[in-house]
Length: 238
Image 1 (cartoon, rainbow, N blue to C red):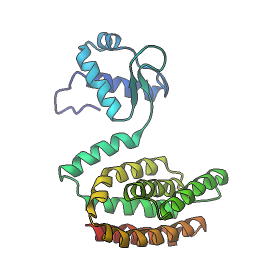
Image 2 (cartoon, rainbow, N blue to C red):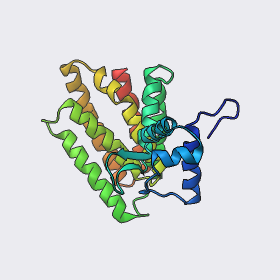
Image 3 (spheres, one colour):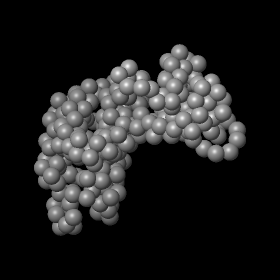
Image 4 (tube, rainbow, N blue to C red):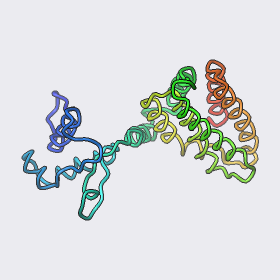
């Protein structure tokens, strides 16, 4: 984890130790990390440096922290990879080091691959569960009373669920993080209600076509429709 070309920061000792212990199986999800004092003594660092490490692990989605006592208090190991990736992406998009256009291109790459990789027969029960969830999200988006922000939230979940049908957990995590990274930019891009009315009508039709292709096992068609959908929308709001 450390870069040999720069001096190590004290908190990196804790980050490195957690990574090593996870890889070795000495730590697993649900385990509670030792307390600040124990970690400080083990690594020869200050408790302030331990707190820095815990905060970083929290932002990365590796631990959940809570106060009190008992097995659920302190820093408990979890796994929310999309949370950490999304935070980093949002900051770099905000600083203009990553552009929304680059995020869109990455979405196209991931979503079209995922559509082509969908197999509805590898785990039929799981596939049906995800298709039911996607169908429900689609129906909620199509309701006339669904507001703009709710539509954006449902839209984001819809795309993640479809990508999840590929069975690739990394793709799912990346999709969640990419959608979160540009969510505010998307929701703020269309300020006119009249303009939004025109856009949302097209989005609903596109979503329905994509879903029908995925549910019908037509991965190539779904991939093409997804590309058209994503690129069309960002031309409209760009």
